Length: 376
Ligand code: FES
Image (cartoon, rainbow, N blue to C red; front, top):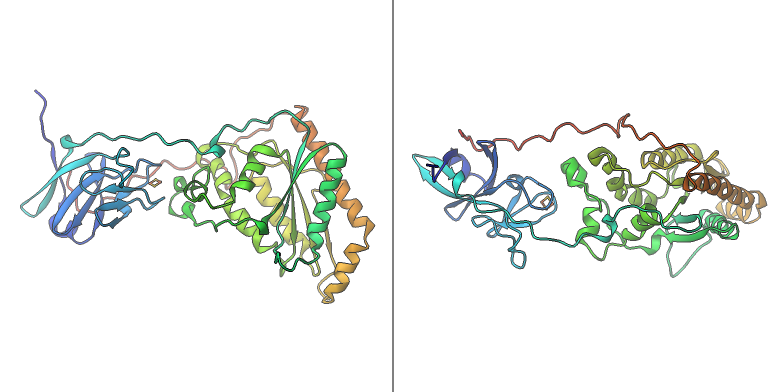
């Protein structure tokens, strides 16, 4: 005969009353124990979405809010928030005896993960037939009401016109035209809290970083990033984009999944003052870690040096420079040649073995801490 109850000790009443939500682990089960208006609740500590630790979440009314991406579950029934009740986590009977909070593990209700339509970006990465596709990303900031001459943007346009002339499909993304949110550091909460597609993209339909993800991951063979030099660095919009690309790079670490392994990347860097090599170092390093291949001499650059404060002359020198425009075209030739080799299968298969700082396998996932003085 099987036992109908399995009461386990989740911790002292005094300790568990002191916080609205407490993570407790008893008998190999992670729980989120809640205390609200004099009553305890116990639900599973694992979120339905991506396994986030509900016991480390917060209480909003009757609902436990997952700390990772804010899904909500009723503190005593485990049901999802109104409209999403079908998405439920196990809930448990709770009682208090002799100053201890007891949870009946046998009383667990069934977990149910409601079906959610997958985000379009999550589809398999398959290169569609067709000519080499080049996406250019202009990362300079611009006031649409008062556009100015941007040296990096103009050279990018020259590069894309040449790509078109040699038979490529092209697309230009002006980052300043896209409304997209900053990376909110989900990865800083836990490695697996950073998801592909990006959690922000999935939660916020107004976020337009999707345009970049779609182009980089699913559409392009070759990526050309153009940036001005801003106080010795790439543009702030470049960094904003790069931070949102974390979710692509993190897939290498979290899931050994290569979303951008058959791409080439090249760069256009211009500025009135110096630090070309430092800017190039950032761009080259980051796109290498995304899995991109680099053509020989993967960037072109222009700067007039530390002492050049006469920016109007910088614009004039770029406008008048045939060699920079030739350089932009030659950059495309090198990049597209490499992309052709990759697309036609002429390159040996890349060895995607893990190694190095960012590509190592994760340590086993740590269990939730026991914080409720549990004795289970
Ligand atoms: S909301 Fe809980 S893991 Fe995403």
